[in-house]
Length: 264
Length: 251
Image (cartoon, rainbow over all chains, first blue to last red; front, side, top):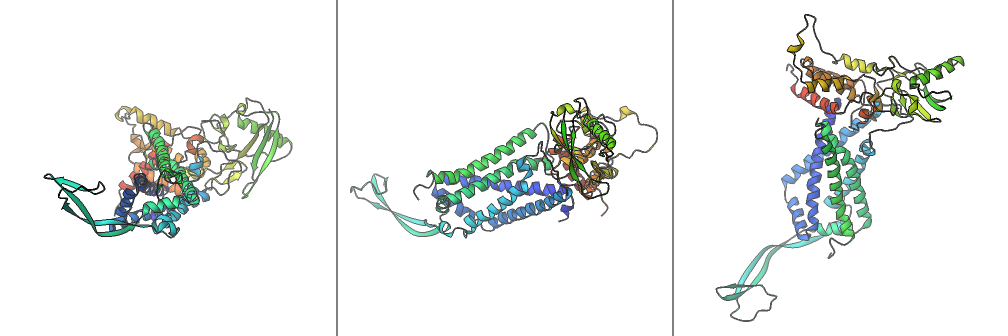
Protein backbone atom coordinates (compact mmCIF):
# COMPACT_ATOMS: atom_id res chain seq x y z
CA UNK A 1 0.00 0.00 0.00
CA UNK A 2 3.05 2.26 -0.29
CA UNK A 3 1.66 3.62 -3.55
CA UNK A 4 -0.66 5.76 -1.41
CA UNK A 5 2.29 7.96 -0.43
CA UNK A 6 2.40 9.31 -3.96
CA UNK A 7 -0.59 11.28 -5.22
CA UNK A 8 0.19 10.44 -8.85
CA UNK A 9 0.53 6.69 -8.22
CA UNK A 10 -2.79 6.81 -6.36
CA UNK A 11 -4.31 8.51 -9.38
CA UNK A 12 -2.97 5.76 -11.61
CA UNK A 13 -4.49 3.11 -9.35
CA UNK A 14 -7.84 4.93 -9.57
CA UNK A 15 -7.59 5.14 -13.35
CA UNK A 16 -6.48 1.54 -13.99
CA UNK A 17 -9.02 -0.05 -11.62
CA UNK A 18 -11.66 2.27 -13.05
CA UNK A 19 -10.89 1.17 -16.60
CA UNK A 20 -11.21 -2.51 -15.58
CA UNK A 21 -14.59 -1.78 -14.00
CA UNK A 22 -15.78 0.17 -17.07
CA UNK A 23 -14.67 -2.79 -19.20
CA UNK A 24 -16.80 -5.10 -17.07
CA UNK A 25 -19.71 -2.68 -17.28
CA UNK A 26 -19.59 -2.64 -21.08
CA UNK A 27 -19.61 -6.45 -21.16
CA UNK A 28 -22.41 -6.60 -18.58
CA UNK A 29 -24.52 -4.13 -20.57
CA UNK A 30 -24.00 -5.90 -23.89
CA UNK A 31 -24.78 -9.26 -22.26
CA UNK A 32 -27.95 -7.94 -20.66
CA UNK A 33 -29.19 -6.62 -23.98
CA UNK A 34 -29.86 -10.30 -24.85
CA UNK A 35 -32.99 -9.92 -22.71
CA UNK A 36 -34.54 -8.33 -25.80
CA UNK A 37 -33.88 -11.45 -27.88
CA UNK A 38 -35.92 -13.70 -25.66
CA UNK A 39 -36.20 -15.95 -22.65
CA UNK A 40 -34.24 -18.90 -24.02
CA UNK A 41 -31.26 -16.87 -25.25
CA UNK A 42 -31.08 -14.91 -22.01
CA UNK A 43 -31.32 -17.98 -19.77
CA UNK A 44 -28.75 -19.82 -21.88
CA UNK A 45 -26.41 -16.83 -21.51
CA UNK A 46 -26.99 -16.77 -17.73
CA UNK A 47 -26.37 -20.53 -17.49
CA UNK A 48 -23.23 -20.13 -19.59
CA UNK A 49 -21.84 -17.51 -17.18
CA UNK A 50 -22.72 -19.65 -14.15
CA UNK A 51 -21.10 -22.62 -15.82
CA UNK A 52 -17.72 -20.95 -16.27
CA UNK A 53 -16.59 -22.40 -12.96
CA UNK A 54 -13.06 -21.34 -11.99
CA UNK A 55 -12.94 -18.76 -14.76
CA UNK A 56 -16.00 -17.06 -13.27
CA UNK A 57 -14.16 -16.77 -9.97
CA UNK A 58 -11.06 -15.38 -11.67
CA UNK A 59 -13.25 -12.63 -13.12
CA UNK A 60 -15.09 -12.10 -9.83
CA UNK A 61 -11.91 -11.88 -7.77
CA UNK A 62 -10.35 -9.45 -10.28
CA UNK A 63 -13.43 -7.25 -10.05
CA UNK A 64 -13.58 -7.42 -6.25
CA UNK A 65 -9.88 -6.47 -5.99
CA UNK A 66 -10.43 -3.55 -8.40
CA UNK A 67 -13.51 -2.36 -6.51
CA UNK A 68 -11.73 -2.53 -3.14
CA UNK A 69 -8.62 -0.71 -4.43
CA UNK A 70 -10.80 1.91 -6.15
CA UNK A 71 -12.82 2.57 -2.97
CA UNK A 72 -9.91 2.40 -0.57
CA UNK A 73 -7.76 4.78 -2.65
CA UNK A 74 -10.59 7.22 -3.25
CA UNK A 75 -11.39 7.49 0.48
CA UNK A 76 -7.72 8.06 1.30
CA UNK A 77 -7.46 10.75 -1.41
CA UNK A 78 -10.68 12.43 -0.29
CA UNK A 79 -9.49 12.63 3.33
CA UNK A 80 -6.19 14.13 2.12
CA UNK A 81 -8.10 16.65 0.06
CA UNK A 82 -10.23 17.69 3.02
CA UNK A 83 -7.08 18.12 5.08
CA UNK A 84 -5.50 20.24 2.32
CA UNK A 85 -8.14 22.93 2.83
CA UNK A 86 -8.94 23.09 6.54
CA UNK A 87 -10.79 26.43 6.25
CA UNK A 88 -13.39 26.51 3.49
CA UNK A 89 -14.05 29.51 1.27
CA UNK A 90 -17.00 31.57 2.46
CA UNK A 91 -17.82 32.37 -1.14
CA UNK A 92 -16.83 29.88 -3.81
CA UNK A 93 -17.73 29.87 -7.46
CA UNK A 94 -16.61 27.28 -9.96
CA UNK A 95 -15.42 28.03 -13.46
CA UNK A 96 -14.79 24.57 -14.86
CA UNK A 97 -15.33 22.04 -12.06
CA UNK A 98 -18.68 20.45 -12.76
CA UNK A 99 -21.33 19.03 -10.44
CA UNK A 100 -20.29 15.56 -11.62
CA UNK A 101 -16.54 16.04 -11.14
CA UNK A 102 -16.92 17.64 -7.71
CA UNK A 103 -19.17 14.89 -6.36
CA UNK A 104 -17.38 11.74 -7.52
CA UNK A 105 -17.03 10.42 -3.96
CA UNK A 106 -20.76 10.89 -3.26
CA UNK A 107 -21.96 9.35 -6.53
CA UNK A 108 -19.38 6.62 -5.87
CA UNK A 109 -20.76 5.83 -2.40
CA UNK A 110 -24.32 5.79 -3.72
CA UNK A 111 -23.28 3.51 -6.60
CA UNK A 112 -21.60 1.18 -4.07
CA UNK A 113 -24.84 0.99 -2.06
CA UNK A 114 -26.72 0.29 -5.28
CA UNK A 115 -24.26 -2.40 -6.41
CA UNK A 116 -24.49 -4.19 -3.04
CA UNK A 117 -28.29 -4.19 -3.32
CA UNK A 118 -28.07 -5.21 -7.00
CA UNK A 119 -25.87 -8.22 -6.13
CA UNK A 120 -28.15 -9.26 -3.26
CA UNK A 121 -31.07 -8.94 -5.63
CA UNK A 122 -29.85 -10.65 -8.80
CA UNK A 123 -26.73 -12.66 -7.88
CA UNK A 124 -27.15 -13.87 -4.30
CA UNK A 125 -30.94 -13.70 -4.46
CA UNK A 126 -31.56 -12.80 -0.83
CA UNK A 127 -32.98 -9.29 -1.36
CA UNK A 128 -36.13 -10.49 -3.13
CA UNK A 129 -36.29 -14.31 -2.93
CA UNK A 130 -39.85 -14.29 -4.35
CA UNK A 131 -38.60 -12.79 -7.57
CA UNK A 132 -35.33 -14.68 -7.59
CA UNK A 133 -36.58 -18.24 -7.14
CA UNK A 134 -37.79 -19.12 -10.61
CA UNK A 135 -36.54 -22.26 -12.29
CA UNK A 136 -37.33 -23.84 -15.61
CA UNK A 137 -36.70 -27.25 -16.94
CA UNK A 138 -34.76 -27.60 -20.14
CA UNK A 139 -34.34 -30.67 -22.27
CA UNK A 140 -30.89 -32.05 -21.95
CA UNK A 141 -31.08 -35.07 -24.21
CA UNK A 142 -33.67 -36.17 -26.71
CA UNK A 143 -34.15 -39.35 -28.61
CA UNK A 144 -36.00 -39.42 -31.92
CA UNK A 145 -37.39 -42.40 -33.82
CA UNK A 146 -38.65 -42.29 -37.40
CA UNK A 147 -41.67 -44.51 -37.99
CA UNK A 148 -42.84 -45.44 -41.46
CA UNK A 149 -46.36 -44.08 -42.03
CA UNK A 150 -47.06 -46.81 -44.64
CA UNK A 151 -49.07 -44.38 -46.72
CA UNK A 152 -51.47 -43.32 -43.97
CA UNK A 153 -52.58 -39.73 -43.69
CA UNK A 154 -50.80 -37.88 -40.89
CA UNK A 155 -52.37 -34.88 -39.09
CA UNK A 156 -50.34 -31.74 -39.83
CA UNK A 157 -49.38 -31.30 -36.16
CA UNK A 158 -46.93 -34.19 -36.36
CA UNK A 159 -43.35 -33.74 -37.48
CA UNK A 160 -42.66 -35.73 -40.59
CA UNK A 161 -39.73 -36.44 -42.82
CA UNK A 162 -39.75 -37.76 -46.38
CA UNK A 163 -37.01 -40.00 -47.68
CA UNK A 164 -36.88 -42.30 -50.74
CA UNK A 165 -40.55 -41.53 -51.45
CA UNK A 166 -41.61 -42.76 -48.01
CA UNK A 167 -42.96 -40.54 -45.25
CA UNK A 168 -41.85 -41.11 -41.70
CA UNK A 169 -43.30 -39.68 -38.50
CA UNK A 170 -40.73 -38.40 -36.09
CA UNK A 171 -41.44 -39.49 -32.57
CA UNK A 172 -39.39 -37.57 -30.03
CA UNK A 173 -38.86 -38.64 -26.51
CA UNK A 174 -37.22 -36.63 -23.75
CA UNK A 175 -34.59 -38.85 -22.23
CA UNK A 176 -33.34 -36.44 -19.61
CA UNK A 177 -34.04 -32.85 -18.56
CA UNK A 178 -32.43 -30.49 -16.11
CA UNK A 179 -33.61 -27.43 -14.25
CA UNK A 180 -31.85 -24.12 -14.66
CA UNK A 181 -32.38 -20.74 -13.13
CA UNK A 182 -35.04 -18.80 -14.99
CA UNK A 183 -33.09 -15.55 -15.01
CA UNK A 184 -35.40 -14.03 -17.59
CA UNK A 185 -38.44 -14.54 -15.35
CA UNK A 186 -36.51 -13.21 -12.35
CA UNK A 187 -35.67 -9.98 -14.20
CA UNK A 188 -39.17 -9.56 -15.61
CA UNK A 189 -41.03 -10.18 -12.35
CA UNK A 190 -38.59 -7.97 -10.41
CA UNK A 191 -38.86 -4.98 -12.71
CA UNK A 192 -42.65 -5.23 -12.80
CA UNK A 193 -42.36 -3.88 -9.27
CA UNK A 194 -42.19 -0.13 -9.95
CA UNK A 195 -40.21 0.58 -6.77
CA UNK A 196 -37.44 -1.82 -7.83
CA UNK A 197 -37.46 -0.31 -11.32
CA UNK A 198 -37.21 3.25 -9.99
CA UNK A 199 -34.34 2.31 -7.65
CA UNK A 200 -32.55 0.67 -10.57
CA UNK A 201 -33.07 3.68 -12.85
CA UNK A 202 -31.76 6.05 -10.16
CA UNK A 203 -28.72 3.79 -9.65
CA UNK A 204 -27.98 3.78 -13.38
CA UNK A 205 -28.33 7.56 -13.65
CA UNK A 206 -25.86 8.01 -10.76
CA UNK A 207 -23.54 5.62 -12.54
CA UNK A 208 -23.78 7.69 -15.74
CA UNK A 209 -22.94 10.87 -13.77
CA UNK A 210 -19.92 9.11 -12.30
CA UNK A 211 -18.81 7.83 -15.72
CA UNK A 212 -19.03 11.13 -17.62
CA UNK A 213 -16.20 12.46 -15.47
CA UNK A 214 -14.49 9.13 -14.82
CA UNK A 215 -13.78 7.91 -18.34
CA UNK A 216 -12.12 11.05 -19.72
CA UNK A 217 -10.41 11.58 -16.37
CA UNK A 218 -8.73 8.17 -16.62
CA UNK A 219 -7.18 9.19 -19.95
CA UNK A 220 -5.87 12.45 -18.45
CA UNK A 221 -4.39 10.53 -15.48
CA UNK A 222 -2.66 8.06 -17.78
CA UNK A 223 -1.13 11.06 -19.54
CA UNK A 224 -3.20 10.77 -22.69
CA UNK A 225 -4.18 14.37 -23.31
CA UNK A 226 -3.37 16.02 -26.59
CA UNK A 227 -5.36 18.75 -28.31
CA UNK A 228 -5.43 16.53 -31.40
CA UNK A 229 -7.66 13.91 -29.77
CA UNK A 230 -8.73 14.95 -26.26
CA UNK A 231 -11.92 16.49 -27.61
CA UNK A 232 -12.89 13.07 -28.97
CA UNK A 233 -12.03 11.46 -25.61
CA UNK A 234 -14.32 13.86 -23.73
CA UNK A 235 -17.11 13.42 -26.28
CA UNK A 236 -16.60 9.65 -26.28
CA UNK A 237 -16.69 9.60 -22.48
CA UNK A 238 -20.06 11.38 -22.45
CA UNK A 239 -21.39 9.27 -25.29
CA UNK A 240 -20.37 5.95 -23.72
CA UNK A 241 -21.87 6.98 -20.34
CA UNK A 242 -25.16 7.95 -21.97
CA UNK A 243 -25.19 4.82 -24.13
CA UNK A 244 -24.64 2.53 -21.14
CA UNK A 245 -27.33 4.36 -19.15
CA UNK A 246 -29.86 4.26 -22.02
CA UNK A 247 -29.26 0.54 -22.64
CA UNK A 248 -29.59 -0.38 -18.97
CA UNK A 249 -32.62 1.85 -18.33
CA UNK A 250 -34.34 0.41 -21.41
CA UNK A 251 -34.63 -2.92 -19.52
CA UNK A 252 -36.96 -1.84 -16.67
CA UNK A 253 -38.78 0.61 -18.95
CA UNK A 254 -39.59 -2.02 -21.57
CA UNK A 255 -40.66 -4.48 -18.85
CA UNK A 256 -42.92 -1.91 -17.16
CA UNK A 257 -44.49 -0.99 -20.49
CA UNK A 258 -44.97 -4.66 -21.37
CA UNK A 259 -42.69 -4.68 -24.42
CA UNK A 260 -40.55 -7.38 -22.84
CA UNK A 261 -41.81 -10.39 -20.89
CA UNK A 262 -45.46 -9.90 -21.75
CA UNK A 263 -46.17 -13.64 -21.73
CA UNK A 264 -44.88 -14.22 -18.18
CA UNK B 1 -19.11 53.52 -8.38
CA UNK B 2 -20.36 52.29 -5.02
CA UNK B 3 -19.24 48.94 -3.71
CA UNK B 4 -19.80 46.74 -0.69
CA UNK B 5 -16.71 44.77 0.19
CA UNK B 6 -16.68 41.64 2.34
CA UNK B 7 -13.03 41.19 3.31
CA UNK B 8 -11.36 38.50 5.41
CA UNK B 9 -9.62 40.03 8.42
CA UNK B 10 -7.24 37.92 10.43
CA UNK B 11 -4.78 39.22 12.96
CA UNK B 12 -1.15 38.24 12.62
CA UNK B 13 -0.29 34.80 13.97
CA UNK B 14 -3.90 34.07 15.00
CA UNK B 15 -5.58 30.89 13.79
CA UNK B 16 -8.93 32.36 12.85
CA UNK B 17 -10.44 35.50 11.44
CA UNK B 18 -13.76 36.73 10.08
CA UNK B 19 -15.33 38.53 7.16
CA UNK B 20 -15.79 42.27 7.67
CA UNK B 21 -17.97 44.60 5.68
CA UNK B 22 -16.67 47.85 4.14
CA UNK B 23 -18.51 50.41 2.02
CA UNK B 24 -16.66 52.32 -0.65
CA UNK B 25 -18.36 55.00 -2.75
CA UNK B 26 -15.62 56.72 -4.74
CA UNK B 27 -14.38 53.83 -6.88
CA UNK B 28 -13.24 54.75 -10.40
CA UNK B 29 -13.64 52.29 -13.27
CA UNK B 30 -10.00 52.81 -14.28
CA UNK B 31 -8.67 51.62 -10.94
CA UNK B 32 -7.14 48.21 -10.66
CA UNK B 33 -8.46 45.97 -7.91
CA UNK B 34 -5.37 46.67 -5.81
CA UNK B 35 -5.71 50.46 -6.31
CA UNK B 36 -9.28 50.15 -5.05
CA UNK B 37 -7.91 48.42 -1.94
CA UNK B 38 -5.26 51.18 -1.65
CA UNK B 39 -8.07 53.76 -1.54
CA UNK B 40 -9.84 51.75 1.16
CA UNK B 41 -6.59 51.42 3.14
CA UNK B 42 -5.90 55.17 2.96
CA UNK B 43 -9.31 55.78 4.47
CA UNK B 44 -8.73 53.14 7.17
CA UNK B 45 -5.37 54.72 8.06
CA UNK B 46 -6.97 58.21 8.28
CA UNK B 47 -9.64 56.74 10.53
CA UNK B 48 -6.89 55.33 12.73
CA UNK B 49 -7.78 51.73 11.89
CA UNK B 50 -5.56 48.83 10.88
CA UNK B 51 -5.19 48.78 7.06
CA UNK B 52 -5.89 45.55 5.16
CA UNK B 53 -2.74 43.58 4.46
CA UNK B 54 -2.42 42.13 0.96
CA UNK B 55 0.47 40.95 -1.21
CA UNK B 56 1.55 42.91 -4.28
CA UNK B 57 4.71 43.80 -6.11
CA UNK B 58 5.10 44.55 -9.82
CA UNK B 59 1.43 45.39 -10.44
CA UNK B 60 1.82 44.50 -14.10
CA UNK B 61 0.87 40.83 -13.95
CA UNK B 62 4.26 39.19 -14.17
CA UNK B 63 5.66 38.74 -10.67
CA UNK B 64 3.07 36.42 -9.11
CA UNK B 65 2.99 38.30 -5.80
CA UNK B 66 -0.64 39.37 -5.80
CA UNK B 67 -3.19 36.82 -4.74
CA UNK B 68 -6.76 37.24 -3.35
CA UNK B 69 -9.79 35.10 -4.01
CA UNK B 70 -12.33 37.51 -5.47
CA UNK B 71 -15.95 36.34 -5.54
CA UNK B 72 -14.82 32.75 -5.15
CA UNK B 73 -12.14 32.73 -7.87
CA UNK B 74 -8.40 33.39 -7.40
CA UNK B 75 -7.53 36.67 -9.19
CA UNK B 76 -11.26 37.18 -9.90
CA UNK B 77 -13.52 36.03 -12.70
CA UNK B 78 -11.75 37.81 -15.56
CA UNK B 79 -9.87 35.13 -17.48
CA UNK B 80 -6.11 35.20 -17.81
CA UNK B 81 -5.40 38.15 -15.50
CA UNK B 82 -3.82 38.61 -12.11
CA UNK B 83 -5.56 40.64 -9.41
CA UNK B 84 -3.36 43.68 -10.13
CA UNK B 85 -4.49 43.64 -13.77
CA UNK B 86 -8.15 43.22 -12.88
CA UNK B 87 -9.87 46.55 -13.36
CA UNK B 88 -12.90 47.87 -11.55
CA UNK B 89 -14.73 48.26 -14.87
CA UNK B 90 -15.31 44.51 -14.62
CA UNK B 91 -17.67 45.19 -11.69
CA UNK B 92 -20.99 46.99 -11.57
CA UNK B 93 -22.14 49.86 -9.38
CA UNK B 94 -23.68 48.47 -6.20
CA UNK B 95 -21.90 45.10 -6.37
CA UNK B 96 -20.94 43.18 -3.27
CA UNK B 97 -17.46 41.71 -3.64
CA UNK B 98 -16.09 38.92 -1.46
CA UNK B 99 -12.34 39.03 -0.91
CA UNK B 100 -10.64 36.10 0.82
CA UNK B 101 -7.06 34.87 1.10
CA UNK B 102 -5.85 31.78 -0.79
CA UNK B 103 -6.99 28.89 1.38
CA UNK B 104 -4.70 25.90 1.59
CA UNK B 105 -3.14 24.07 4.50
CA UNK B 106 0.18 24.54 2.70
CA UNK B 107 -0.41 28.33 2.41
CA UNK B 108 -1.04 29.45 6.01
CA UNK B 109 -2.48 32.95 6.42
CA UNK B 110 0.06 35.40 7.82
CA UNK B 111 -2.29 38.37 8.17
CA UNK B 112 -5.60 39.33 6.55
CA UNK B 113 -5.16 38.45 2.87
CA UNK B 114 -1.43 37.64 2.96
CA UNK B 115 -0.50 33.97 2.85
CA UNK B 116 2.82 32.19 3.18
CA UNK B 117 3.52 30.66 -0.23
CA UNK B 118 7.00 29.36 0.54
CA UNK B 119 5.64 25.82 0.04
CA UNK B 120 5.98 26.55 -3.70
CA UNK B 121 9.56 27.72 -3.14
CA UNK B 122 10.37 24.47 -1.35
CA UNK B 123 8.95 22.52 -4.30
CA UNK B 124 11.18 24.57 -6.63
CA UNK B 125 14.21 24.02 -4.39
CA UNK B 126 13.71 20.27 -4.56
CA UNK B 127 14.17 20.12 -8.33
CA UNK B 128 12.84 23.11 -10.27
CA UNK B 129 16.21 24.06 -11.75
CA UNK B 130 18.95 22.88 -14.09
CA UNK B 131 22.44 22.43 -12.67
CA UNK B 132 24.89 24.21 -14.97
CA UNK B 133 28.46 24.60 -13.88
CA UNK B 134 30.33 27.76 -14.75
CA UNK B 135 32.69 27.81 -17.70
CA UNK B 136 32.65 28.97 -21.27
CA UNK B 137 29.14 29.27 -22.70
CA UNK B 138 28.31 26.62 -25.25
CA UNK B 139 27.59 27.78 -28.78
CA UNK B 140 23.80 28.14 -28.93
CA UNK B 141 23.64 26.64 -32.42
CA UNK B 142 25.16 23.41 -31.17
CA UNK B 143 22.10 22.76 -29.04
CA UNK B 144 19.19 22.04 -31.36
CA UNK B 145 15.68 22.49 -29.95
CA UNK B 146 12.61 21.89 -32.07
CA UNK B 147 10.39 24.93 -32.50
CA UNK B 148 7.33 23.06 -31.22
CA UNK B 149 9.11 22.01 -28.02
CA UNK B 150 10.52 25.48 -27.48
CA UNK B 151 7.01 26.94 -27.79
CA UNK B 152 5.54 24.36 -25.41
CA UNK B 153 8.33 24.95 -22.90
CA UNK B 154 7.60 28.70 -23.11
CA UNK B 155 3.89 28.03 -22.50
CA UNK B 156 4.80 26.07 -19.36
CA UNK B 157 7.38 28.62 -18.27
CA UNK B 158 4.72 31.33 -18.31
CA UNK B 159 3.83 30.09 -14.80
CA UNK B 160 4.47 32.87 -12.28
CA UNK B 161 4.00 30.57 -9.28
CA UNK B 162 1.22 32.68 -7.80
CA UNK B 163 -0.65 29.78 -6.19
CA UNK B 164 -3.99 30.33 -7.93
CA UNK B 165 -4.05 26.71 -9.18
CA UNK B 166 -3.85 25.14 -5.73
CA UNK B 167 -6.23 27.76 -4.32
CA UNK B 168 -8.89 27.32 -6.98
CA UNK B 169 -8.68 23.53 -6.92
CA UNK B 170 -11.56 22.05 -4.90
CA UNK B 171 -8.99 19.52 -3.66
CA UNK B 172 -6.25 22.05 -2.96
CA UNK B 173 -3.88 20.33 -5.40
CA UNK B 174 -0.75 22.05 -6.69
CA UNK B 175 -0.45 19.80 -9.74
CA UNK B 176 -0.70 22.55 -12.37
CA UNK B 177 2.21 24.43 -10.80
CA UNK B 178 4.40 21.34 -10.50
CA UNK B 179 3.33 20.18 -13.96
CA UNK B 180 4.34 23.50 -15.52
CA UNK B 181 7.72 23.51 -13.79
CA UNK B 182 8.53 19.86 -14.55
CA UNK B 183 7.37 20.25 -18.17
CA UNK B 184 9.35 23.39 -18.99
CA UNK B 185 12.59 21.54 -18.22
CA UNK B 186 11.52 18.15 -19.56
CA UNK B 187 10.86 19.76 -22.96
CA UNK B 188 14.31 21.31 -23.27
CA UNK B 189 17.69 19.62 -23.79
CA UNK B 190 19.20 21.39 -20.77
CA UNK B 191 16.63 19.69 -18.54
CA UNK B 192 17.42 16.13 -19.63
CA UNK B 193 20.23 15.12 -17.22
CA UNK B 194 18.04 15.76 -14.15
CA UNK B 195 14.72 14.90 -15.77
CA UNK B 196 14.01 11.72 -13.77
CA UNK B 197 15.29 13.03 -10.45
CA UNK B 198 13.37 16.29 -10.88
CA UNK B 199 9.97 14.71 -11.54
CA UNK B 200 10.32 12.39 -8.54
CA UNK B 201 11.65 15.04 -6.15
CA UNK B 202 9.16 17.79 -7.04
CA UNK B 203 6.16 15.47 -6.78
CA UNK B 204 7.44 14.08 -3.48
CA UNK B 205 7.86 17.58 -2.04
CA UNK B 206 4.43 18.58 -3.34
CA UNK B 207 2.87 15.61 -1.50
CA UNK B 208 4.86 16.29 1.66
CA UNK B 209 3.82 19.94 1.75
CA UNK B 210 0.22 18.85 2.30
CA UNK B 211 -1.37 19.80 -1.01
CA UNK B 212 -4.40 17.80 -2.09
CA UNK B 213 -4.69 15.29 -4.91
CA UNK B 214 -5.65 16.16 -8.46
CA UNK B 215 -8.95 14.65 -9.61
CA UNK B 216 -8.99 16.30 -13.05
CA UNK B 217 -11.69 18.92 -12.47
CA UNK B 218 -9.61 21.38 -14.54
CA UNK B 219 -10.59 24.29 -12.27
CA UNK B 220 -6.90 25.29 -12.08
CA UNK B 221 -6.67 25.79 -15.84
CA UNK B 222 -9.67 28.14 -15.75
CA UNK B 223 -8.30 30.13 -12.78
CA UNK B 224 -4.67 30.33 -13.97
CA UNK B 225 -3.78 33.98 -14.77
CA UNK B 226 -1.29 32.67 -17.35
CA UNK B 227 -3.74 30.23 -19.00
CA UNK B 228 -1.52 27.21 -18.42
CA UNK B 229 -3.17 24.11 -19.89
CA UNK B 230 -3.98 20.93 -17.93
CA UNK B 231 -2.23 19.16 -20.78
CA UNK B 232 0.91 19.79 -18.72
CA UNK B 233 -0.65 17.80 -15.87
CA UNK B 234 -1.07 14.87 -18.28
CA UNK B 235 2.58 15.37 -19.21
CA UNK B 236 3.55 15.33 -15.52
CA UNK B 237 1.56 12.11 -15.02
CA UNK B 238 3.58 10.57 -17.86
CA UNK B 239 6.87 12.04 -16.64
CA UNK B 240 6.31 10.75 -13.13
CA UNK B 241 5.46 7.19 -14.15
CA UNK B 242 8.36 7.18 -16.60
CA UNK B 243 10.63 8.33 -13.77
CA UNK B 244 9.28 5.73 -11.33
CA UNK B 245 9.82 2.96 -13.87
CA UNK B 246 13.20 4.05 -15.18
CA UNK B 247 14.90 5.51 -12.12
CA UNK B 248 18.45 4.16 -11.86
CA UNK B 249 19.02 2.98 -8.32
CA UNK B 250 21.72 0.90 -6.70
CA UNK B 251 20.15 -2.29 -5.42
